[in-house]
Image 1 (cartoon, rainbow, N blue to C red):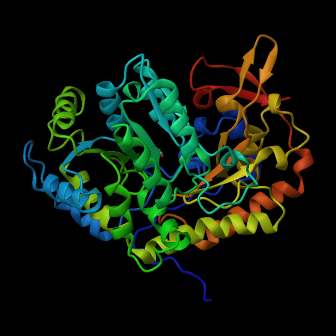
Image 2 (image 1 turned 30 degrees about the horizontal axis):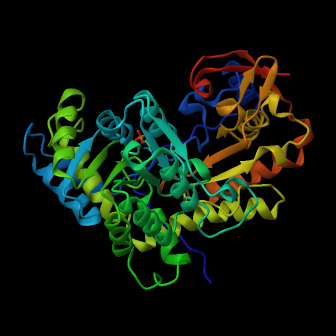
Image 3 (image 1 turned 180 degrees about the horizontal axis):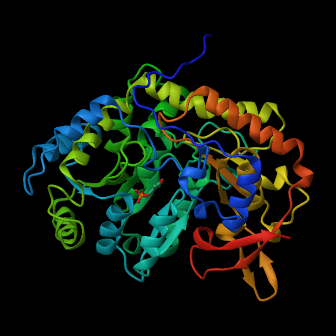
Length: 455
Ligand SMILES: *Cc1c(COP(=O)(O)O)cnc(C)c1O
């Protein structure tokens, strides 16, 4: 088979600033070994997140120029609404400034202290918005999905027996909505099968519980279904996406992922009464229902992005470039969360740096080493994010991972080859990487603000 090339050519460039190892060492020390404290300019290859970091196409930029900035009833809104309806088939499309705004609106209506909201795995903003209402957010991932080395085609699936058991335990009246996240971002970017979505639908429908899809990466999930699930090889991505949404009563979405835009989101709902309540809340904090916190030009760019993301040539390149990075790291002996996910590769820092105990944050130490070695910015998803102290005892996270998230249509194969070289170089000298200690802690969301120093 021939190389799968980037299915686009480049007509605008943004120069990268080259730095020396010495400069990067000084920058990392100054940043307290926290990649969130580094200026974007000082990063060579930025794999911190795939959220809002993608490149727009010429057609999207044309939509920006054609944006209708009318306060009410803008032409750009109707384009946006039509694009979302064409994919989701939902009755009501409510634009928001990003995914978490749609979550906040949904759970402000449905959440309260007695309620329980299950998901395969809640993303952190979803969990936070549920817990903010006093409700309990429950992850029902198949337990094997947490094992970095367990290989399965749909490792993001919900454990449907556990869902059944939860409904029996708390009662359907205490479950105002069930979520399913596609792909499962917080569990390695792993896909969810159509069969699993259908089964979750069956169970929730039996009890009258609405099902909402956290659809941030719906197109990547559709492509995995096409590649891996029997009966879908000949279907186009839009048909697969439509079938996924046909099992749901609504969806939350961040256009910063599979919207191929730099900002935006939506809440899609079938139920008329719920939609009225959502629009009333929208007006309080986001804006009038035909713009919802976005400029007309953004709505136009998202409408166009939603068409492009379902193009199979794009998606083949997208999934292949992530897989290519994963494959080459495995070949070099680097332990990663397998199989490669859709939008990111997660390095298993516990296996990479076995000499560093969890209490010295091997993931964060590896993030530091990758930046110093090659100017690559990654993010820790391990004990910095989830570890905690119980008295004198440190309770580590289940896994110590370092996420390399791939922005959409931004980097070429030679950039990815460079990333592979840098990771393998650090791997060769891994015994020289030192553990870290916290020198300034933060009470909430420590990973954004804590400062570290080498032990
Ligand atoms: C990014 C993300 C969100 C939140 O979207 P924002 O646009 O960042 O607010 C919710 N769920 C998942 C799965 C995500 O990846």
